[in-house]
Image (cartoon, rainbow, N blue to C red; front, side, top):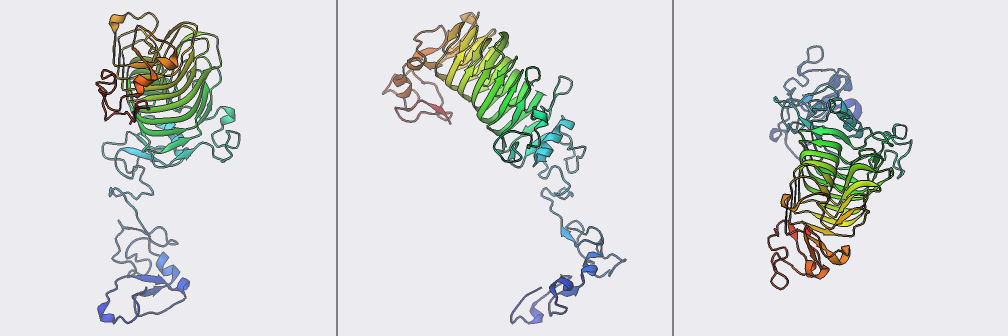
Length: 449
């Protein structure tokens, strides 16, 4: 047990403290009590009368787990002090979100779409119940670590890859999902030309937040990284890095292929987005959302390339909108190269009331239909559109005028180092928020903080 050199026994108090004499090979000592392995393992409770009842007699069973008669006692770790050890508690911090630490547990979310249990187990959830899930580890879908998606990966699924969670209107994922800043790496899905593809399928009345996706490769009909239909959902603090998104016959978005009555904030997407179907269709490709109906986007950014092929609409943030659309403090840096009917730097086409505020497009545009550097697009009357201090770089886009937004040169956009910089044109960025935007030096574009 120790205590050590030179201590007199009257200065030491040792109570019910033992060592295993069979393992240590020491049978006596002035401090502590020697017990055999069988004596230490026999008790299954303090003072177990089927063993020596003096051993562990006053030990606390809420602190120690005595196991079976062939186990040593072990400490019970109960992070949230709810009476359930961490080993059995599905919600160790008692915040109502079930901890997900493995891909296998992530897969189990599909069996409780409301997030009330994990594989039927709700042990340790608060009295009001659990209502979602949270990541406590980074997870990698490249389970064999060879750098490619193949049959050696656990969720290869005969080449289809990950199966979306919540695959119908009657089978909707309503749980909250929080990433806690953890990453999902190398998500791979191949829905072909018929099946929709995204981590989650239909989601509603929930929040998805604090997630990082690294190098997802996703192809399918309606295709996106998080959801192919978000309904009354809030998506925030999400980063999607180096995504490859291939649409084969539906809407395509970096976050959601369809978003209805939802909000997106503090989101970043870098992606190469393309269409392999090229057969035309009344669908949208957007850096964040393909098709929307009543959507708000704030403090969000897309970087990359969008090629919608022969599909009708493409936009740097939203492809096609049929409901109120509000975009504030958002940025697109990249190329929206092609669509058949309407191509826009921020929005391909919006067929309802649209408000764009304090946003910026830096890139090139192309397509066989209407091309607008900010967008808003096909068929909208200007009295239904409110655009405030929203710009595009005319030097890069090669477009000098448009009915929506304001054209500025590269130097005009880079000159201000603060909102309303009087050493430049003080009207540019005059009302932009310096706590949201970093204006850098006079040779930098503003970027989101």
